[in-house]
Length: 162
Image (cartoon, rainbow, N blue to C red; front, side, top):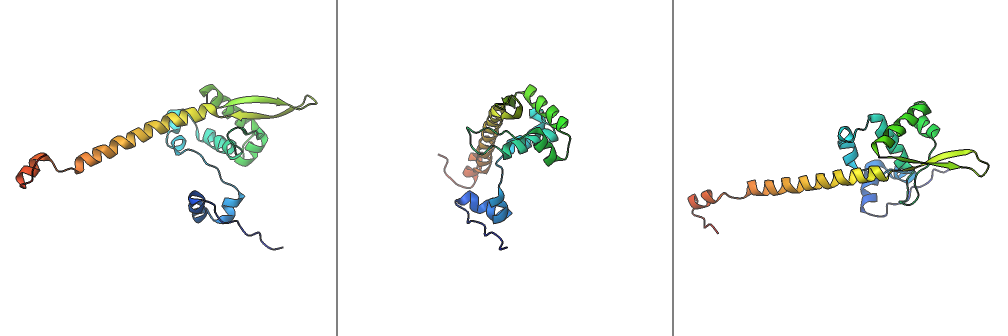
């Protein structure tokens, strides 16, 4: 059987990611996840396991209005842990306000996998992102100020101060 030929990247981001990870990996799927969550795990009160669970949830969240709904068993299998470990992690993140579970029932009354709303995490990431961008802007301004020629030096070198 012939190996499927990966599709060419569509935009600049796709091109860069394809260059980094390869066309087949990109076509198989990738997950966008804010860096500020990795960089601020401790400040957010997240454990390493929590972040891995969030990554799994994010990998099933393709469109803003279509929330992810993988089963705890599926997440557990991917992380090689017991489903009860996933349940405890999700409960912790619920208490932190990052995840909200929405229970689903089948027509026959059986339980279906939960829907996971990550709006709390999105708000926390947005707040941290804004702070990080503000800090970057302040540092850039400080760097420019340090690079500027001091007024006293201008006079010594015969420059004109404005």
